[in-house]
Image (cartoon, rainbow, N blue to C red; front, side, top):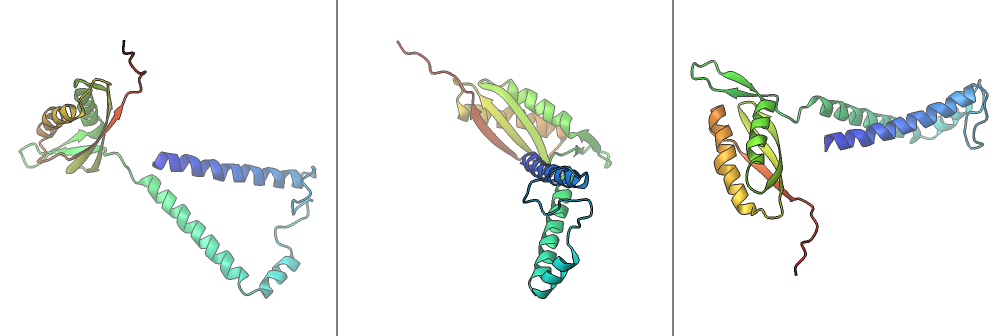
Length: 192
């Protein structure tokens, strides 16, 4: 979700900046610009003295501009902070028994869990992502199911085998999981 929002926002901001910057550059170089474009020469400014005086008479204009700019700043800060937050868990704290503990790479545990889940009968592909805190991770598992698979049995085996092995090997008290099942797209079988 975050990568989709990033791509859309970056695309829109980039498009606006390229179009606006290109037309300002064209006007500054003395090239022809559309007739509706407000600046058409090298000496034009964004807001002339007459425009500033005209808007000063309206009591609503400057507060509106300030509020819009403040909202844009808050949205930009929210977007920036969302980039810093990691969705994927980088490491898991494993209790080693000596009171110190050890760190296990999150990607390693994800790979092992995905590999074991992918070997289950009826699973075409498995993807795993660990989220949460390093002392209490949670697994998000996406299984692509074969047409002949029985979802209930596969889910039971995933819980009893793959998740139990991962939980026990990492020394975790619990490993909650959210599992999403999708079916492989296939052609209809011909009945004769």
